[in-house]
Amino acid sequence: LLIFGIPEWRIPKEPIKKGIEELKSAGVKFHLNHKVDDEEFSEILESYDAVFVGTGAWEPISMGLEGEDLEGVYQAMDYLFKVAMVREGYSKEEEIPNLGERVAVIGCGDVAMDACRTAKRRGAKEVFVIYRRSRKEAPATEMELQDAEKEGIEFMWLTNPTKFIGRKRVEKMELIKMKLGEPDSSGRPRPEPIPGSEFEMDVDSVILAIGQRPTPPFKGDFGIKVEWGRIVTDEEGRTTRKGVFAGGDVSLGPRKIGDAISTGKKAARAMEMYLSDGYWP
Image 1: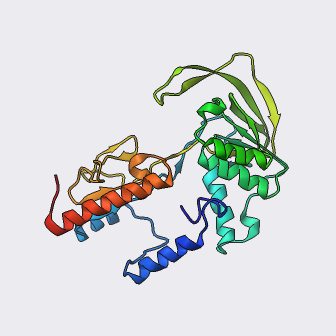
Image 2: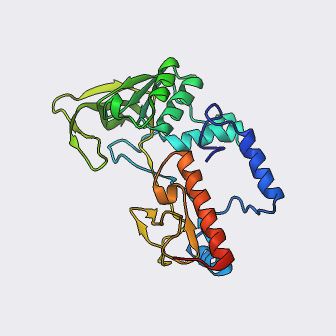
Image 3: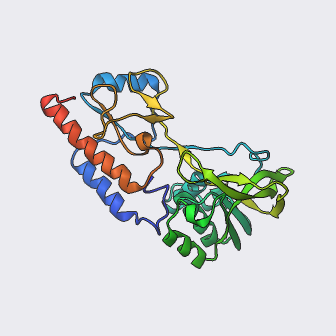
């Protein structure tokens, strides 16, 4: 994620690559281009004294709207990865989608900020960030919002798409204005549509950045409790199965990088205690 999911201008890649090489030199073995299924996960659990799961949150959340399957409607992480793959020399420039001149980004978190600024820097003339709440409730920081505005990004607050329109490729969106109601489960005011406020907007491409779901590397029952897609852990990363630890987005849900690093460090200390003296509360 640090290399491919986050732009170079946000996180320089050379220190990360250097860190990976240092881990290799220390004896850490990396098995790349390999997806673990239930059968292999079971083998891993049986073969190792301790296991840490840090598989993140990769499943994109769909809006479930009419026209979402049209050409020109992209998931933000897919788009950012394709840009990074070219930057790192793993694919060719033509594999990056041509977004056209007028691009809409749905959502207003960190990934949305990365996507809108990347689209702008890659030549889109007009980039709009569409968010169903107000600026005050935006997950992105005020500094991020200001940085995006300095690059010419336009924000459409209290607005939400209702469908994507086009023959084969998206050509326009139908949107509706929103108002803020009582707080919802997140503690933020609930966005409520304003009847009769629908309008259409021409677009060449749409980037969806409304979030990702945690992606544990298993679907079966391994004695590891999962709630709402997240692996349940204690404060030190212990799961409900002895010897198995987890951290980062797969246990927290999508968070900041610092949160993931913190849970990893806590779990590492707990793993060291478990491996040295068998401590498991």
